[in-house]
Image 1 (spheres, rainbow, N blue to C red):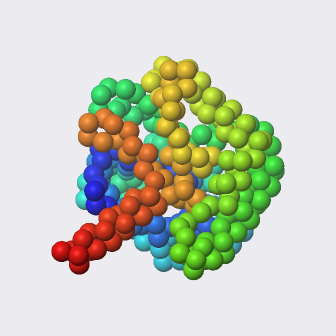
Image 2: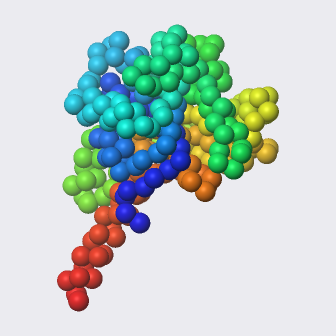
Length: 265
């Protein structure tokens, strides 16, 4: 399969434009190769926390926003559900800006009739809700781990190795982080159960997932600072967890193999 793909619905979150760690270039390539009838932006698209301390805003960050707006002009429905890093936009819920719908949360109906509540998820993060200063402290530590990704991957590229995320590795290995992820997922599944829907689609914790939790389909879009992941609903109703780095790597390998076969012929 090539890199071009089409979906009924796309779900993207945690881009953190305005930060050095945002992989806006990768997202821009993803958006160039991917079409959808509806796109949900599931929070933390622009990182106003970081912007208050001094923004990092290269051209690629502008390009991502312009690409989304161009998709709107061409007929794509875009729904923006702000997260905690762009929470000021929540004041405009129910309004439209540039054709983009702003909502606190939404109910999305899949092609097969299943209903999912779509929300960022920070409301169910105890640290963010009850200890905001601790959230900021944790955000600084996480930002440092993300910063370390850059020099590490500079060295890896020169060694011919692929992208590897130190911050993701630490998050998946430290017991307290693993326990937090588990509790967060259970809390979101419980919220879906409370709303009498079939599942939940969220972001916030930068940990992509698609799994059953007690009969509730829990889906997390992941992020565009570490894993470069999104969720796609295909026209037949199948849910795909898209790992963009893997798509690019597989395409490059297939192209290389095809070139080698032609040369050998």
